[in-house]
Image (cartoon, rainbow, N blue to C red; front, side, top):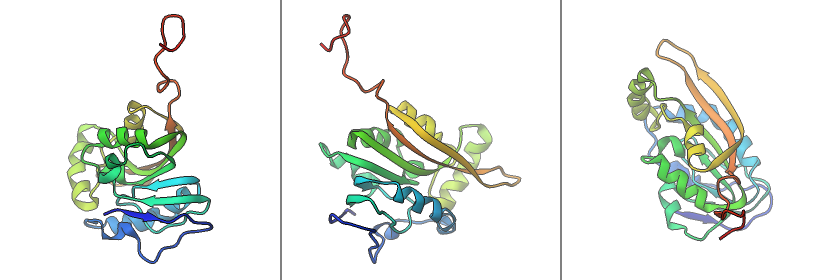
Length: 201
């Protein structure tokens, strides 16, 4: 599934959400509804040429300052060599990806030098109790709740420029958190290698 949306001015409100035919499991729809205001806020922060890779938390379109919007599933990002975007948006795609490290690497290759990654993701850690709950989360929402999203982005060469962890639910079985943030390629880790004299070889 790939859908390129024509260059635009103003707010894009297509009749059909290309993410609506994704496999939505259990009550991920309720989770998506609850996070819609956060996703809308992040979409309004996107500028320039934008790639929206959707994900289980994606809902609708509220892009405003966008020159061109490309909507594509996460599985297609590796098929876009040489393309660069000013903004890449991920709404649950990193939490749902079978191999998140590969997706992070592919996204790093798609961002322009001043580009930003905007994301709303389930956030977790790898402690044993959360790994046990992860099976439930995958069945219920199609996403992992044991992934350290911010740590994975850092390991993939990104610098987090804003990060907000939000607690969505408390309960006996633990807490459901989301992480909302922006990241850019870390300029200290993406420069060309330098020789002993400090000059590029």
